[in-house]
Length: 341
Image 1 (spheres, rainbow, N blue to C red):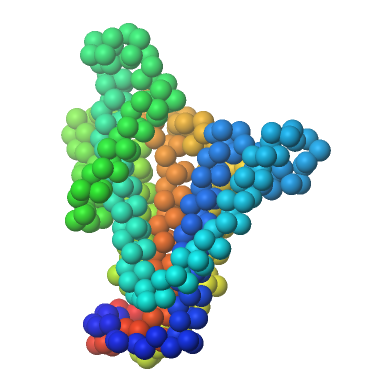
Image 2: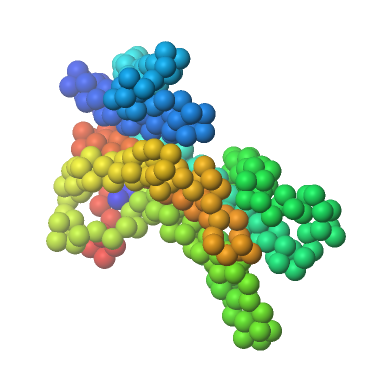
């Protein structure tokens, strides 16, 4: 579906109420996700008590922990009133405009992830190869070479700065396509084939690099694919239907399937410090082979990027499709819907 033009939809009381409700749902979902991630960081890395842990285990908590837990609870409770106030005081803001804004946020997050995996793969691959070939000590000295062989040091002083650089690059460079990451995967695989079968040379880091970029390609491109209507549909329920019918299916699908899927990933993966996402990230986990890449812990973080980027895009998708249903935007039926759906 291609949005062609914004209709001058009259601001009726019923439209205004629906506008408030849908925009409040979308922005609340975005900011609750942000608060959840911040509180997860405080719980795991700063040893704050956490809302659930404190209120179900008060007998084991101190007074200071109680204050911190209440602050965390209030951070959640404050989101909806603040968002509702914002939406009520901006009644002329169109849902389609907010949809585009959230889509832009998702695109920025994906660009950050893209540049991060590119830079991390290249730099960590170079350091790991130098370590295998005993080149770290001649180049960096004994002490620094020893530290670069420790995952916590490399993660803190190499990976994190590269992620910050990626954030700046993503802000400045806005034309990145995930197809470039697919090309890097092909080059990495070609490197393995040439090195193995021509030069009889192979290292664990070579396979790690392929998996690192391959995982990033599929998880980061999902939100972009949703924006471009590229995901596989159930043809019986979708193809050949009217624009309004598709908007209903998309809206209900976001509420009943999209949001729950993302929150299942976030809650199961980040419920406590030993969960499958938090534990690798907190411990800078690496593969069992000591001479591979030191980026295995970041692959757990890929799931967070996937879930958050999809939440942003789902919110954008919800606003866009409700805007279609209420006539806020006019949509021209794509002639190829039956083929592409």
